[in-house]
Length: 393
Image (cartoon, rainbow, N blue to C red):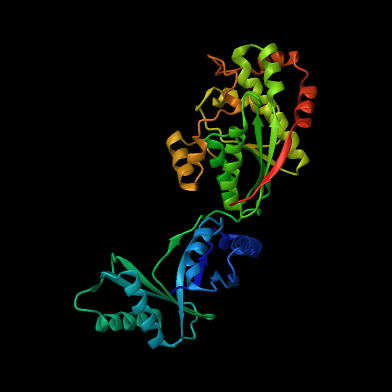
């Protein structure tokens, strides 16, 4: 039935003189993500984007993709009709039967963006409502001006007349790629993929960094991270580069030369140093992590302060104020949760001390690190590392 989608872009319309740049980026992202569906086109008119389907059978596949595109506020499958009141009446009547096949309450709403149409919006709504009432089976449809089960919307625009009854929420946010670049510290856990999703929601494109500790972590742990990146790539619409950082020797050096209770603090400081080096080499401006305050020993405020101290670029933590239940709900919704709970260890669980320090001292951490050849360890680690690009399935 539907061969046209009306796309609303919400906050992009509030960007002032830069608005057109954001909208063009959104249209570009939509074309990239929809190009695998044959014959689908994206076009832009004043205040709206449109997706034209080659065939009505493409609707479900197209909707599944469009709902994942950041920058879209809502989507409506629409029917386009002729610019006459009779055509609007018939299109609205057909739309209502499709929306409420078993009957129910309804209200007709009209938006007359094109003021050249001779009737005003309330008049049009009344005429269409009266037409529906004269054509319906007895008592099947009930007009309700205050709390209807379904609205039938009619938009009269310069480019055409459009009738719809669904307003489906989009992913919202900003188009991916309009806000700069970051580096995501991607573990195999629940939190960091959610942080990556939320970074993209604010328009940030990122490369991921995963620390592996072969032979203590194996191929299954590595595949878990690759699969997480594949899910995140669905929201980007293109590949995500994942840096696989060989971290075993650094963990061993810290274990052998530093107090056990400071192990996690010193490991995280080394990780941040490495990610900053990668970020500066890859023209990224920020580091993203999945940390939230108080969740584990390395995520107390004292720990964050001591760990952050080794880098100069900003560290953003989108999950910082959430509890585990909230993070898990997002992970389930975006499709990463079932992958994250696979029972394969990542490097952060290797050599985990029984009683890690939760209020570390910066002076103590710096003193313990004097036993390490930090630059040599980092250089050796990076030389043994690799990178792959993961694409959405």
